[in-house]
Each structure stands twice: as C-alpha cells, then as structure tokens.
Image 1 (cartoon, protein in one colour):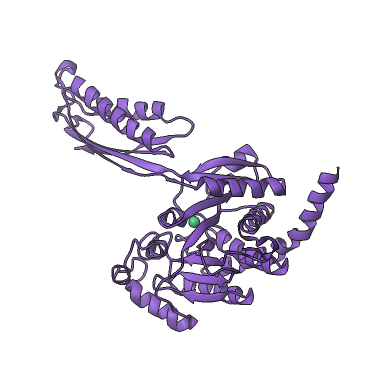
Image 2: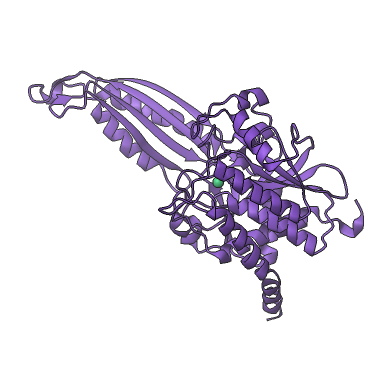
Length: 424
Ligand SMILES: [Zn+2]
C-alpha cells in the first residue's frame, strides 16, 4: 500500500511536465512540414527542417543549454557538469521521411529536452556534463543516411559530407548547411571536441512487440545485424510445353525450396525473407533461363548470421545441383551493434525504480545510436508504437507511454550523473 502511494505521488509529481511541455513540443514540431493530406515531410536541412531546428534551439536555450552547431549540421546543447569531461550524451533526430509521422526521432529530442528541464527544476547536480544532440539526416532522405551522426563519430569527413548532392532539393550538403547557419545565426563549431562516457537514445519502437506484450518500456539489447544473400541461378531456357519434365534445368525449383527454407530457419529472434526475385525472361510459356534471388536475414547474434550464411548458401547450391542448375552466390553481413551491458543495467534500474513494466528486446530498425557506438557506449529506450506503425501518417504512441519513456530517460541520466554529496 505504502509503495503504491509513493508511486502515485511520483506519478502526480512528474506527470504534468510531460502532459504540458512534452506534448506541446511534439505537437508544435509536428505542425512544421505538415502535409495537406496528413503526415509530415521534413527532409533534413529543408526549409521545414530548418524551422523545426530553430524551434528546438530556442527551447534548448530556454532550458539553459549552450547551443552549438557542428559542420555536420548537428545541434549540440550543452549543460555543464562538475567536471569538464567525459560527457553523457542523449538525442535523436527531427528529420522525417516523406509523409512520415510526428514521433519518430522527435520523441528522443523532446525527451532529452524535458530531461534537462527536470534536472534543472529538481536541482540535480550533475557530475558529468550533458549534451543533447539533434543529428542531421538520420533518414537519409535529403543526402545520405546518418549524415550527422557519421560526421559526429568521425566516419565522414567534412569535405566528403559537404559535397554530397541533395536528393530532395538540387543543393549540396554544404550549401544547405550554410542556408541553415545564416537563418539560425547558430554558433558554429567544427566538431564536438570532448570524450563521451555513455550515450542514450529514447525512441518509438516502430514495431508491434511492446504493444502485443502489453509492456510500457523496451530496453534495447542492440541493433540487429543484416545478412544479405544474392544468388544467380542459371538454368536452361526452353519451351514450357515441349520440354519433358525429366529433361529440364529449371531454376524456379531451387528458388521455391529456398523460399520455404528461409521461412523454416527464421524463428523467434531471427527474421528472414526471400524478398527479391527477378525471373528471366518471365514469360508464361517459357521455362526460366535464369533467376536472381535476394534474401534478407536479421539477428542480434553475429555467429548465428555467419552460420546461416554458410547453411543457406550450401542449401541453394545443393538444391540447384539436383536440378542441373548453376548457382552463383554472393553474400555479406552488416554486423549487429550491441548496447553496452552497463547502460542496459542502468536503464533497467531506472525502469524498476519507476515501477514500469518492460522487456529486453532487439531493435530491428536502424538508429543514430548504432553510429555513436563507434565512439561510446550506447543504450536505447523504446516506447510502444500503436499497431506497430511508423514512417507513416498513422504513426502513434499514447501520451501516457511518452511520459513513461521520458521519465525513464530522466531517471537514467539522473542515476548516471548525479553528483553524490558533491564529491567527484
Ligand atoms: Zn528514428
């Protein structure tokens, strides 16, 4: 009973912040770049994105942050700590896909902003300095995916980045950035010069798992790796009517078996799809001469992906041989990125203190955090997506879950950075 009252008090204490400020910020940003038929289009460094960036910069300053923009266009709001470095960083993106939703990315930025406000209002003395970052072009609709985070992590050099031609507008990255600098009168820095201890990102799940499991929070274990297998199956093109069944080299037979094999392998923690088929000549009365197929398999476990790469390639070869079909196979693995054990534990502690329900889960979508993992230890917090929908006007997360997600981020940063008795 006592525990319940404490929980209710905590709830009442922090709830209005979210309801008023977080909701207002998400709704205000969501109005910028609104499509007439629903949805939001805010490609990075477009006029709409610049307007949204300036909104966030104003709110950052209002919350007492020192705001800078680097040469990757990343907005960096700094709250000083008792020591100069390393930093604790948090953030996400505010660019959207065309006709996207209002929550993807924005929740992490606004959540970080609210976290700073709560730290200020609750007079938390932070030992480590905190930086709230808005990364440029996470979606890659304007220039290239993760343009900002890749620059931030040193994976893209300034010259390379600035000369990338625009996809949304006929403008180079460097010129679009200049337009933003002039309009916002931003304090421009070359690069964020400090070391980072931990990085956290709050994000909507963009999938249906949390809703299905009825949980408030997803603690992300990592971002899944991708195995891609491409196979060219060369058979013998001939007449579908006159060629006897025992005299054929038909590549559609190993193709059909492989489709089912992929489905058989993909269980629980692995998803797999034979998602690309190109049949030549694709004519109804002709036995195909060749078929190109493409397979996409995702898992958090790198060794599992490596084993599947061997297993499926061998399966395609064997089944092709049975049909006298030649198989040319190529494949590659994009490694999974794991969240740091230490960050998973801190988030778990934070969630437990707040009494929310949670599961640990992989992220099957890509995020700026995976790029940040090159330079620091990452952690991610998910909140449920209604019907699992994202990158669409129907993208939705109930405000109650947003509130919980923001509270988890706030509590996580508090746990990690609170100066105990002012001793360093
Ligand atoms: Zn996102």
